[in-house]
Length: 121
Ligand SMILES: [Ca+2]
Ligand SMILES: [Ca+2]
Image (tube, rainbow, N blue to C red; front, side, top):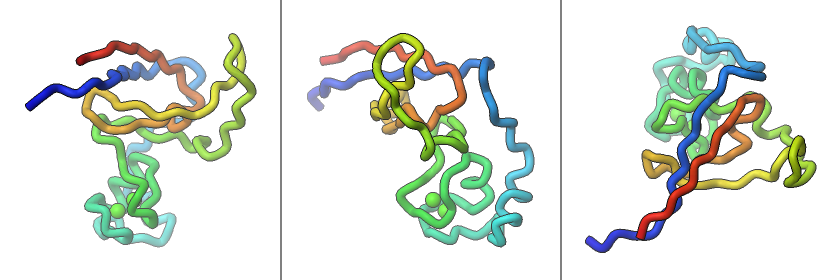
């Protein structure tokens, strides 16, 4: 198999400016939404409890937990880009992570993100 070019994205989650707390009780979140934590309302292969823990939408089959275990930020849909300069909020983009999964920058809102790029051919 011929190797393909790909961008490699390594994401390091920092401990600074994290407005979210760890979700240690996914069942409580799923139940709070009125969903059975063991059910799979959208049929995407992830239980409602798993989706609550990963902060993906249990009613949207296109929104699934990241394989790498990155929890999506609560504010991901509310990020307002301001520019590409230092101190500004960059626009959203998507790249492949080390698991070959597409990840979006804005899914890591309110966290420190380090991007490492390398090319393979
Ligand atoms: Ca699901
Ligand atoms: Ca889903």
